Image 1 (cartoon, rainbow, N blue to C red):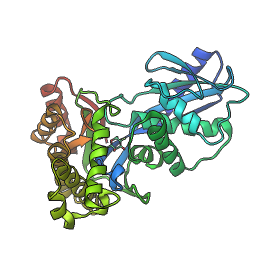
Image 2: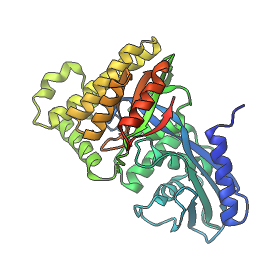
Image 3: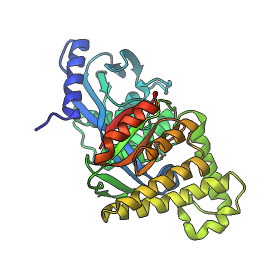
Length: 368
Ligand code: GAF
């Protein structure tokens, strides 16, 4: 069997741990990143999403040691080390994701001894591919091994989201943590974020999803994301519903009557939910042309109604469509990050060549 990214990163992080701490780790765990195919910003509105795990990810190795109530964590990828007390608040550092996850892990016991940990990742940060969810889920999985607990995959996703919402202070939905914890490589994951009902969806035959980083890094803890969350809360309040996903296309008249920009924000959520439902149907029927059209419409809606795209991202989507992609859209939280393009396999090389030539800051990250 081929060596997977998971095998490679597990071996790398174990070796880095041993080199740094002078003994082999007691436990190693891994979690992948994700790319979202359709359904952006619907998750914190109780809507539906369609992400899939990537073959890029994050591994963490750890052992018990050091002073009680203390986490000493180093990164093989960033070449830094942090020592944190388990009761510390978030500091804005990358180690927050590890600390918050240990603090939220069922059964994690730091009373007699601290924990030393090492992280290794090949997920770019700020690319919209859930590098933080991968750290959280990998850490929660690791805590299970280290402290002998057994947390099921859905519970891990919920705990990881709590780390974001309550510790890091990022008001995200559950899509990323769920895709990373519950998704399986080689399938998309259709998820109803309110009921947490989910099922795998097949990928289109003879086609590839190409993930391309625009070169513009985003930071979702900056204001843009929280502003969108607040706008959705205001729109649902004005419309008298609990969440915008309580509304459907038949409510468009009421939505159009909202004050700008709330009308456009609500229109994106309602039409995006509809696109996800039609998209998962198209995938299960092998209707790749419909899926591609939905991706294009999703990008337009993110750009014009939800205002989370940037001129560089719009240009990259346009460039991909002009160079043979049949669908393309911004993926993830936006304000920078990556696009995902859908291309027939025999056009993949042409598309890659064109993007690398015409967009010098763009970086091809994955082809699935
Ligand atoms: C980020 C968030 F973390 C997700 O919860 C989701 O809202 C996404 O942006 C946009 O769809 O990745």
